[in-house]
Length: 270
Image 1: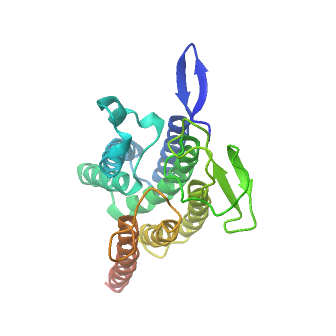
Image 2 (image 1 turned 30 degrees about the vertical axis):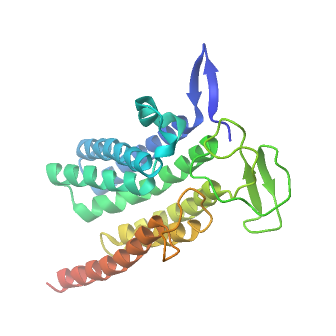
């Protein structure tokens, strides 16, 4: 909504970058707090987190550029992450690779670390979606209303009962009522974060929270894709690639939870 947070001596500080950085800092603090409670070396966790963050940013940006080449006019556009434009699934893939490298290098407990990571990831992702709102990326389809076209958030009697209009300079089309997919995802992710935080303190086995995250986010993303305007459906099936990935996440989460549950039971018996 407001791409530039502040301008100091001609230097623009972008809202997207500030919010993404804020989300990363909160995730960093949360993971280190979990690590100390679990008795895991916080320095090893910190190094793993930084590696996951770097590869996550790289994967997210590269995936976005490949998916939306129309937004790239020069090499500078590829590197200008602060303007908005990150693909979550690409970032997730890069982050997972970075995390696995760190886990193997420092011999961290795999599923215990994964549980800590997804709780932190959910809150960081939620705050990042506020950044998407400021930049106008990841915008929704046109909202069916003859209401105001002034930039801002407007209420409606149609689901989800509000819509957004972006100003010129945002990634989204200006002066067009759109589904507020960024804010819808923010609210969904905040709900997921609270559920995961509750589950983390009462998890029946390591890996449970990770499986639960995959299930909940898969369902959320599958639903949201029906309202997003940046990913066209695949010809013949009517679903986007993101929805296909979301369905795979859901199926994998169920299979993984069942497997981990059986493994945990076998360990107790042994």
